[in-house]
Structure formats: structure tokens, C-alpha cells
Length: 69
Image (cartoon, rainbow, N blue to C red; front, side, top):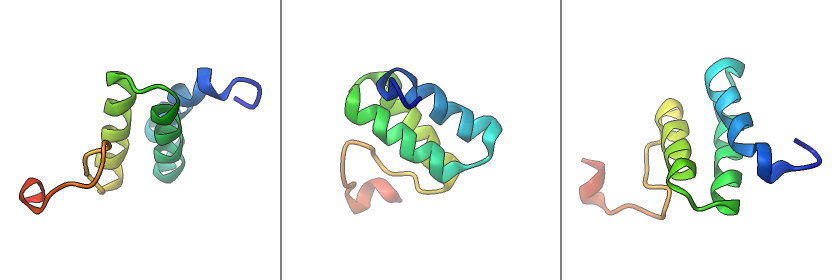
């Protein structure tokens, strides 16, 4: 992870969300992955991290009040 964070951030995020039990670390790594690679997979990983953490919002930016109902 230290030598090639762009290659492992998504895998590490998945680990922390599923096995590691550290949602905050998982979200941090998912966001890092999304910044480096704007792919549908990275957006889905951020969404899953936010669902697990209870902070579901659109990873592409602030959401309108209508989408939070």
C-alpha cells in the first residue's frame, strides 16, 4: 500500500469495510481511490462505504434536500 497506493486503495478500502471493521478507514481509502480513478467501481465503493457508515450521500458532490427524503 505504501509503494503503490493507487493500485491498492480500492482493495484496502474493501478490506476495512468488510473484514477489518473500520468504516472510517474504509471510507477514507475509498475516497482516495475515487480521487485517483473516477470509475464506476470507485464511485460504487464510496457509496457502499457511506451506506455502511450511515452517511449516504452522492459521492459526486452535495445533494439536494429532495434526494435525502
